[in-house]
Length: 300
Image (cartoon, rainbow, N blue to C red; front, side):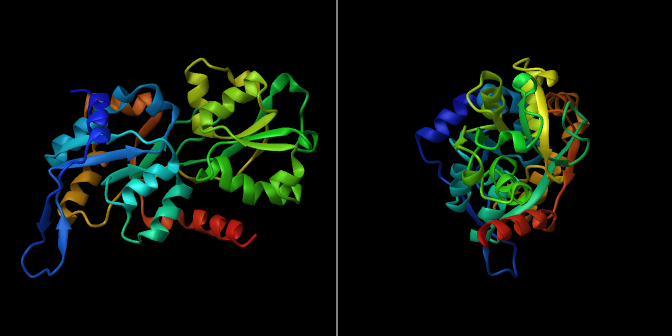
C-alpha cells in the first residue's frame, strides 16, 4: 500500500490507539500505538510526490516494528493542532511552528533534523537562511528599491517566510512590512513564493534557501533568475518532533530510525533526493534562537 493510499485512509477515519503502561515502578502511563501517525508541514516535496518519503517510512517501520500512517496536512497550523490533539505522533515542523506548539505542550520533543548539502543558495549543515529575492531582470538592486512594491510571505507560522521578515528584516527597513510595502500577501508555500516572483505576481518574496534550491532543482527556475536583496542569520533546520507521551523506548527507536537512515542504500538515496547528507540529533535548546525571535515579534 502506498503512502498516498495510507494518507487517504488516515484522513478517512480515526485509528484506534493503544495505551501501554510503563514498566513496573512507574506510576504514569505512556502511549504505545499499534501504528505511528506521521505528518509534516506542507512543502513542495510533500505536495509533489509522497512516494519520496517511502524510505523514511520503511526505516521507521523496520526500527520501531510499527505500521506508519502518513497524515497529509493543509497548513503549518494543521500539523501543530494534529500533534497537540494527539492525532499525530511524529511530525516535521518549521522551527517557528515547533516553538508555537511546544509552548502549548512542553512535552513535545525534538529528535533530529537534516544536515543539508551545499546547494545553489543553501549552505552546508543543519541550518538555513531566509532570503529576500526578486527577479534579476526586474531592476530592483536594493531593499530601498522595493519600497511601495508587493511582497510575498509564505505562511503565518513559517520561520523564514514570516517570522524573520517581521522581526529581523523590519529592523533593516525601520518599519512594519505593511507600512513599507504597498501590499503583503501570503502565497501558501516557499515554492509558490519563488514562482510568484518569476511570474510577476509579487515583486519580491522571502524564501528559505533550501526551498529555493528545490525550485531550481525541479527546473522551475534557474539560479540566474534571482537576485538576493537581503539574507537572514543562520537558523536551525526543520525539526522532527515526537509527542512526549510516547513510551521512552519507542521514542528512542524513532530517533534511531532517523539517525541510521543513511546506513542503507535506500536511505542514502532518500537523503540525496532531499539534498541532505544525514540526519543529526537535535535538542529543544537548539531552537532558543527562534524563541528569542518570537518574543521580539510578540513584544511589538
